[in-house]
Length: 211
Image (cartoon, rainbow, N blue to C red; front, side):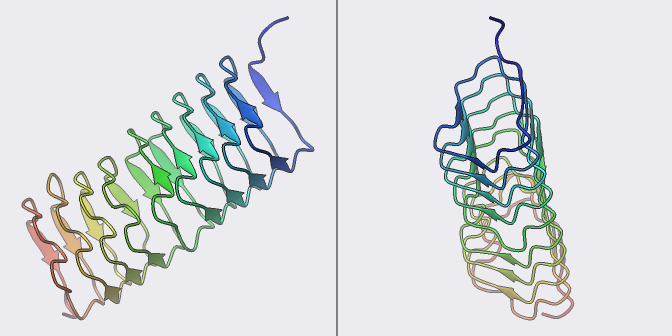
Protein backbone atom coordinates (compact mmCIF):
# COMPACT_ATOMS: atom_id res chain seq x y z
CA UNK A 1 0.00 0.00 0.00
CA UNK A 2 1.43 3.42 -0.92
CA UNK A 3 2.25 5.81 1.89
CA UNK A 4 -0.31 8.48 2.78
CA UNK A 5 0.92 11.84 1.45
CA UNK A 6 -2.25 13.99 1.44
CA UNK A 7 -4.99 14.12 4.05
CA UNK A 8 -8.28 15.94 3.37
CA UNK A 9 -11.07 15.21 5.83
CA UNK A 10 -14.06 17.46 5.25
CA UNK A 11 -16.17 16.36 8.24
CA UNK A 12 -13.53 16.40 11.03
CA UNK A 13 -14.26 18.98 13.75
CA UNK A 14 -11.56 17.99 16.29
CA UNK A 15 -8.09 16.49 16.11
CA UNK A 16 -7.61 14.62 19.39
CA UNK A 17 -4.49 13.77 21.40
CA UNK A 18 -1.86 12.46 18.98
CA UNK A 19 -4.57 12.28 16.32
CA UNK A 20 -2.15 12.89 13.45
CA UNK A 21 1.33 11.96 14.60
CA UNK A 22 4.55 10.59 13.11
CA UNK A 23 3.04 10.35 9.62
CA UNK A 24 6.40 10.73 7.99
CA UNK A 25 5.29 10.75 4.34
CA UNK A 26 2.39 13.14 4.81
CA UNK A 27 3.05 16.43 3.00
CA UNK A 28 -0.33 18.20 3.04
CA UNK A 29 -3.28 18.35 5.45
CA UNK A 30 -6.59 20.10 4.82
CA UNK A 31 -9.26 20.03 7.54
CA UNK A 32 -11.91 22.49 6.32
CA UNK A 33 -14.35 21.95 9.25
CA UNK A 34 -11.90 21.40 12.12
CA UNK A 35 -12.33 23.89 15.00
CA UNK A 36 -10.03 22.39 17.65
CA UNK A 37 -6.51 20.97 17.63
CA UNK A 38 -6.05 19.18 20.97
CA UNK A 39 -2.77 18.68 22.86
CA UNK A 40 -0.18 17.11 20.53
CA UNK A 41 -2.87 16.86 17.85
CA UNK A 42 -0.68 17.28 14.76
CA UNK A 43 2.88 16.40 15.64
CA UNK A 44 6.13 14.96 14.29
CA UNK A 45 5.04 14.70 10.67
CA UNK A 46 8.50 15.08 9.18
CA UNK A 47 7.53 16.03 5.61
CA UNK A 48 4.36 18.00 6.30
CA UNK A 49 4.75 21.31 4.46
CA UNK A 50 1.17 22.62 4.08
CA UNK A 51 -1.46 22.73 6.83
CA UNK A 52 -4.82 24.36 6.13
CA UNK A 53 -7.23 24.93 9.02
CA UNK A 54 -9.65 27.57 7.69
CA UNK A 55 -12.17 27.43 10.58
CA UNK A 56 -9.90 26.34 13.45
CA UNK A 57 -10.59 28.43 16.56
CA UNK A 58 -8.19 26.94 19.13
CA UNK A 59 -4.80 25.26 19.17
CA UNK A 60 -3.93 23.50 22.43
CA UNK A 61 -0.63 22.64 24.10
CA UNK A 62 1.86 21.46 21.47
CA UNK A 63 -1.10 21.19 19.12
CA UNK A 64 1.06 21.82 16.06
CA UNK A 65 4.55 20.70 17.02
CA UNK A 66 7.76 19.25 15.63
CA UNK A 67 6.59 19.41 12.03
CA UNK A 68 9.98 20.43 10.74
CA UNK A 69 9.03 20.84 7.07
CA UNK A 70 5.96 23.01 7.71
CA UNK A 71 6.17 26.16 5.57
CA UNK A 72 2.52 27.15 5.10
CA UNK A 73 0.08 27.38 8.00
CA UNK A 74 -3.38 28.77 7.27
CA UNK A 75 -5.28 29.98 10.38
CA UNK A 76 -7.63 32.75 9.20
CA UNK A 77 -10.12 32.59 12.12
CA UNK A 78 -8.04 31.18 14.98
CA UNK A 79 -8.55 33.24 18.14
CA UNK A 80 -6.78 31.12 20.80
CA UNK A 81 -3.35 29.55 20.81
CA UNK A 82 -2.24 28.38 24.25
CA UNK A 83 1.40 28.55 25.39
CA UNK A 84 3.56 26.27 23.25
CA UNK A 85 0.65 25.75 20.86
CA UNK A 86 2.92 26.05 17.82
CA UNK A 87 6.38 24.69 18.58
CA UNK A 88 9.48 23.39 16.84
CA UNK A 89 8.17 24.01 13.32
CA UNK A 90 11.54 25.04 12.02
CA UNK A 91 10.73 25.99 8.40
CA UNK A 92 7.78 28.24 9.22
CA UNK A 93 8.98 31.76 8.38
CA UNK A 94 5.84 33.90 8.66
CA UNK A 95 2.59 33.60 10.57
CA UNK A 96 -0.54 35.73 10.11
CA UNK A 97 -3.34 35.57 12.67
CA UNK A 98 -6.04 37.99 11.51
CA UNK A 99 -8.56 37.14 14.28
CA UNK A 100 -6.20 36.98 17.26
CA UNK A 101 -7.14 39.88 19.53
CA UNK A 102 -4.92 38.71 22.40
CA UNK A 103 -1.99 36.33 22.65
CA UNK A 104 -0.55 33.99 25.26
CA UNK A 105 3.11 33.92 26.36
CA UNK A 106 5.22 31.64 24.16
CA UNK A 107 2.26 30.76 21.93
CA UNK A 108 4.93 30.18 19.31
CA UNK A 109 8.01 28.47 20.68
CA UNK A 110 11.38 27.63 19.17
CA UNK A 111 10.32 27.95 15.54
CA UNK A 112 13.81 28.81 14.37
CA UNK A 113 12.89 30.30 10.95
CA UNK A 114 9.89 32.29 12.14
CA UNK A 115 10.90 35.90 11.53
CA UNK A 116 7.56 37.70 11.11
CA UNK A 117 4.26 37.50 13.00
CA UNK A 118 1.30 39.58 11.84
CA UNK A 119 -1.38 40.37 14.44
CA UNK A 120 -3.63 42.97 12.80
CA UNK A 121 -6.30 43.17 15.55
CA UNK A 122 -4.26 42.27 18.63
CA UNK A 123 -4.53 44.93 21.37
CA UNK A 124 -2.25 43.49 24.05
CA UNK A 125 1.18 41.89 24.14
CA UNK A 126 1.30 40.31 27.61
CA UNK A 127 4.24 39.84 29.96
CA UNK A 128 6.97 37.51 28.63
CA UNK A 129 5.04 37.00 25.37
CA UNK A 130 8.21 36.83 23.24
CA UNK A 131 10.75 36.59 26.04
CA UNK A 132 13.92 34.75 24.96
CA UNK A 133 12.53 34.30 21.45
CA UNK A 134 15.88 34.58 19.71
CA UNK A 135 14.50 34.24 16.19
CA UNK A 136 11.66 36.74 15.75
CA UNK A 137 12.51 39.93 13.84
CA UNK A 138 9.15 41.65 13.37
CA UNK A 139 5.87 41.59 15.27
CA UNK A 140 3.36 43.65 13.30
CA UNK A 141 0.58 44.63 15.69
CA UNK A 142 -0.56 48.17 14.83
CA UNK A 143 -3.48 48.23 17.29
CA UNK A 144 -1.59 47.15 20.40
CA UNK A 145 -2.27 49.47 23.34
CA UNK A 146 -0.45 47.59 26.12
CA UNK A 147 2.92 45.82 26.33
CA UNK A 148 3.67 43.80 29.47
CA UNK A 149 6.81 43.33 31.52
CA UNK A 150 9.62 41.41 29.82
CA UNK A 151 7.43 41.09 26.70
CA UNK A 152 10.45 41.06 24.38
CA UNK A 153 13.16 40.29 26.93
CA UNK A 154 16.24 38.98 25.10
CA UNK A 155 14.40 38.85 21.78
CA UNK A 156 17.86 39.47 20.44
CA UNK A 157 17.01 39.61 16.72
CA UNK A 158 14.00 41.91 16.98
CA UNK A 159 14.62 44.65 14.40
CA UNK A 160 11.97 47.30 15.14
CA UNK A 161 9.46 48.26 17.82
CA UNK A 162 6.76 50.35 16.15
CA UNK A 163 3.48 50.52 18.07
CA UNK A 164 1.59 53.75 17.25
CA UNK A 165 -1.42 53.03 19.51
CA UNK A 166 0.47 51.83 22.58
CA UNK A 167 -0.32 53.85 25.72
CA UNK A 168 1.01 51.48 28.40
CA UNK A 169 4.33 49.68 28.73
CA UNK A 170 5.75 47.78 31.71
CA UNK A 171 9.33 47.47 32.92
CA UNK A 172 12.00 45.59 31.00
CA UNK A 173 9.72 45.37 27.96
CA UNK A 174 12.47 45.49 25.32
CA UNK A 175 15.64 44.94 27.30
CA UNK A 176 18.57 43.12 25.72
CA UNK A 177 17.14 43.20 22.21
CA UNK A 178 20.79 43.58 21.50
CA UNK A 179 21.57 42.42 17.96
CA UNK A 180 19.22 44.32 15.64
CA UNK A 181 16.77 46.64 17.39
CA UNK A 182 17.50 49.98 15.75
CA UNK A 183 14.16 51.83 15.83
CA UNK A 184 11.52 52.40 18.50
CA UNK A 185 8.40 54.45 17.76
CA UNK A 186 5.48 54.96 20.17
CA UNK A 187 3.21 57.85 19.21
CA UNK A 188 0.97 57.77 22.31
CA UNK A 189 3.21 56.47 25.09
CA UNK A 190 3.54 59.13 27.80
CA UNK A 191 5.75 57.26 30.28
CA UNK A 192 8.83 55.24 29.39
CA UNK A 193 9.18 52.68 32.20
CA UNK A 194 12.33 51.64 33.97
CA UNK A 195 14.78 49.56 31.94
CA UNK A 196 12.39 49.53 28.97
CA UNK A 197 15.24 49.50 26.42
CA UNK A 198 18.14 48.46 28.62
CA UNK A 199 21.08 46.94 26.78
CA UNK A 200 19.77 47.71 23.28
CA UNK A 201 23.15 48.65 21.89
CA UNK A 202 22.00 48.99 18.25
CA UNK A 203 19.15 51.42 18.98
CA UNK A 204 19.73 54.57 16.91
CA UNK A 205 16.24 56.03 16.32
CA UNK A 206 13.57 56.70 18.95
CA UNK A 207 10.25 58.52 18.57
CA UNK A 208 8.15 59.27 21.66
CA UNK A 209 6.27 62.50 20.95
CA UNK A 210 3.97 62.09 23.98
CA UNK A 211 6.63 61.22 26.55
